[in-house]
Image (tube, one colour):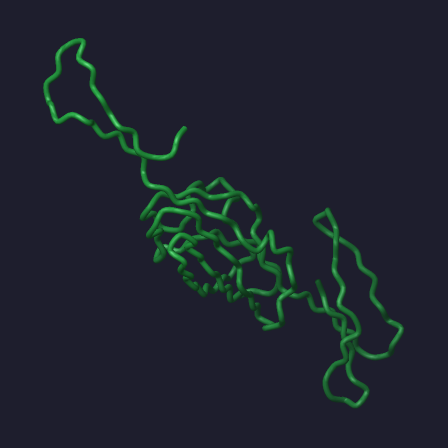
Length: 185
């Protein structure tokens, strides 16, 4: 999205002419400049923050919120605007009904979820939401499809195999019973 504005005739401030969106499936696009009014016309792009994918992430209890697979795009946030960005994230623990707020300064247009100070304290679903973004211009953020502003995280206990008998010595042919803990399969 970008704003189109011109200088006010009175000499102070600017007049907003239009707010337009650039939509293209290509990595570049063309747009028309409106030059019907004399004076300086400004085109400013509004900052946008969105998750690259909406895939669910999986973590174990007490894991930190950080990248698990360096090659995976999961948990990557794309930022449009002029760096540095001030990104405000909300981490919602739905099982415990708690919300954690993280403010991050990002100096690049791509950032992976990496919060070593945050770890998962309970089993269940979590949601990470982009609450707000500011760039160098401190303009209001452009609205993004809500589906791209959050991702879901599933937190589970580590799988375990627990012997049900305390015996240490077994004979050939004995049946040994174990309990599997976690969610099948």
